[in-house]
Each structure stands twice: as C-alpha cells, then as structure tokens.
Image (cartoon, rainbow over all chains, first blue to last red; front, side, top):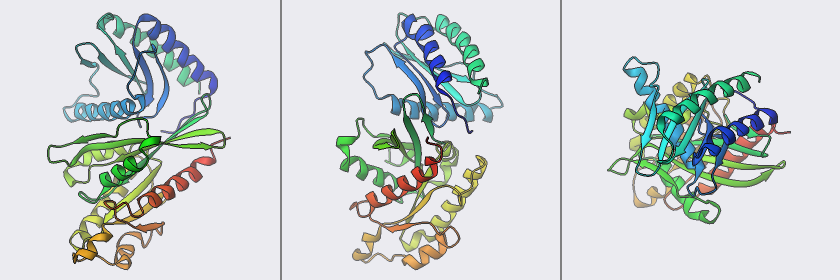
Length: 131
Length: 201
C-alpha cells in the first residue's frame, strides 16, 4: 500500500473536509490511512482529545470489523457508526486504502451526514485517482 | 508504511514491538512513557483484557524532533503476544515501518521466541513485506532475572536461535528496570529514519 499525495491533492482534500463537514457543523473530521496515519484533519476548534490516538484506534477498529465481516461472508459492513449521548462517530472507507472518520453531535442527523459522506467520497476518489 | 506529509512537513512512522506473550513489550512502552512523559502530549492507549494482558495493542505517539526540516512523529505499537490473538496481531502490523523483536531470555521460553519470530515472518509476508528487509532490532529482555537465579538463555543461544540469519543489532535489556530500553528505541528510530530518509527531499 505505497502511496504519495502531493500538495495539491492534500489541499483539495482539506478543502472538502472544510466545506462539506466542518461548515455543516461536524465537530471533527479525519482522513486516515489503514495503518492509522493521519492524512488530513480539521475540527471546529473545540476538540480536546488526541487525534493521533483516535486515528490509531479507528484504524484498528475498522480493521477488526472488516475481518469480522469477512468471517461471516460479507465483503464489509456498509454502516459503521457509534452513537453516544453527545458525540457520535461515523466511519467510512475511501478507496481501498483510506478511512474517513467524522465526529458529530446531536445537531447533525445521521442521514444527512451519510449523504454528505457519500458525496464527499466520490470527490475524494477523483482526487486520489489522479496520483 | 510511513506517511510523509509534504504540506505540513511532517512524517508519521509506525514502529511495532513484536514478540511472545509476557515478554515485556508493553513494559518497554510503559518505561518510555514514564521517562519521556514531558514530550508525550497524550496518555498511552492500552487495550487490555481483565488479566492485564494486551488484547489488541498499546499505542504511544512520540515526537522525536525535526529531521531534514520534517517534524517526525514515531507511533509506537505493541502487538498482543499470545498465540490465539493472531488476527489482531496481524492488523497491528499493517503499514509497519520498523520492528523491535522483544525476546524472552528465560530458558522456558526458548521455543516461544522462535515461534513468535516465525509468526512475524508469516504475518509480514501477508502484507508482502520481508522480515529481512524491514528495519529490525532484537531485544533480549529480562536479563535481570539471572541475578535471581532464574535460568536464562545465553546471549549466544539467543543469537543462534533468532538472529543467525537476520544479523540485526541486538540489546540485552531489562524493560522492568529500564536497562537498554532507550538504547533499543534509539536504534530502531535511527534504522527506520535511515530507511525513510531516501523519501524525504
């Protein structure tokens, strides 16, 4: 899984994270690779947890869930979502190598977020394929 | 593999502590965390069972400063050592840049060391990586137990069992007392950075 992303691609990814997620009220959004490295991340300025630890755990969690999916004969589970009282986590695969993690509160609906994620993934795929 | 962010001038690399169960991988990380607490902005993440055994991994992000104008962040992981946790062990190895193999010096654990190293080879092969080509350091842990009369494998035996064909740097260590823990870390960081530096411009 060798890959390189140039400055232009990183700028474009960040612009989408900003316009499609942060401006829509998402608290924090991360693009990571499957090894747990952070490609790009943005938040609303009120996030106090360590995003590097979160990325490591998210990659592990996603890997574990994918492995479980394979065991029961599924390619992958299409919805990976953790609901909390105030904060929710949503995971989505972007191409084969990356993972988009969004952290959002009660004011954002899951349906709306899933719609935004699906749209954004298409844009990301175009950007990533240009490398 | 490491992620090199040209925009932020930042490198994130993954170093995994591998080895048989109860060998001292987590203890290595705990010592590093204690010693460099001021430079580590976050808590160590540990996913453990009730019996305090590593279930999935431990994780410690570690800033090592600037190299060639890039700020370098080493992400230290341990794997669960127990044989039954191979599925999760394999997940942790994904994207690894450098490995510390923590071998248990106790005579009783001789076979476990060999099996664990063999397992590392197989798991890396699943990611099309070769143990002989990846930055690797051997750590012969628990040398302090010899003073308590517990029978230990000699360094020659350990070298013969584990390092004869690999021929990588090795350290006699005691993770519990912190002996050679930092030296092991420095060695694997320098080997990993040397292998990454060709990608830094």
